[in-house]
Image (cartoon, rainbow, N blue to C red):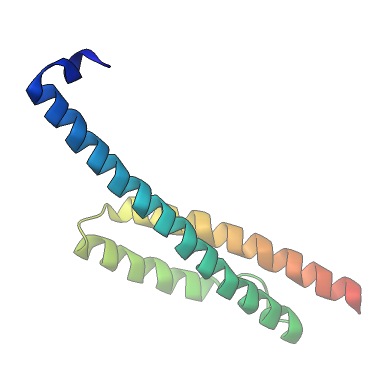
Length: 109
């Protein structure tokens, strides 16, 4: 037991902290599931692109998505720079997946 928990106020704070952390854990779990669902669709996009010979990256689409996400972030009171960095990380991973899919298609032929 920490020193904070030895007082009634401290116990209340720890209870609130536990509750907040439980909420954060639930959101983290939801984010993981949402990302998994998103990647299921991006894998389908990658297979479709590879089948018709489209390049793995689509810079115009990426610019549109960044602009859209920045607006959403501002509306949600989230730092748009953070939102853009987060999307850039995801897009880089998606492009990597698309490149691997395209390489696999090319070696099948």
